[in-house]
Image (cartoon, rainbow, N blue to C red; front, top):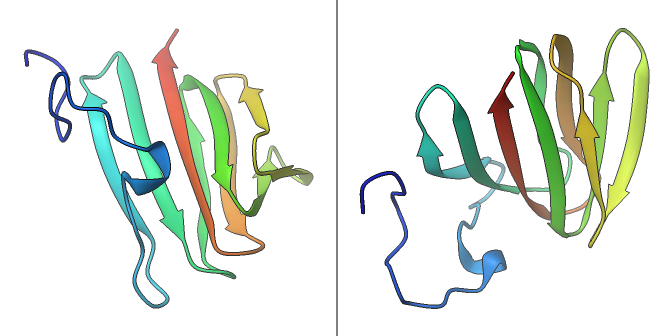
Amino acid sequence: MKYLKNINPYEPVAMGDMVKHTGNKIASKSLIDNGNTEIRFFSFGEGESIDKEYYTMETLFCVLQGSVKILYRDSDEVVLNEGEMIALESGINYGIEALTDAKLFNVLVKV
């Protein structure tokens, strides 16, 4: 495959099975990361987090299992539960905190 990686063509895969964490570590798997588009799957243990970072790309988070808190800008936050998604504008800081064991994927698109 020319652009996608870590996935086999023509083979169905459950999205929740794309990545699994072990212990207190966050696991991730990238399907594409070419500077214009990123698609990543994450698996978090409860209480694990990714600190806020500045992102120049528009972002979409989709929660596959569990609950997470998205922290953005200076002090804004939103809780996402299984089956929910949220879009974030480019040019902001954001981070993620797992409220339960959780799996999600995110899509980042260069503006």
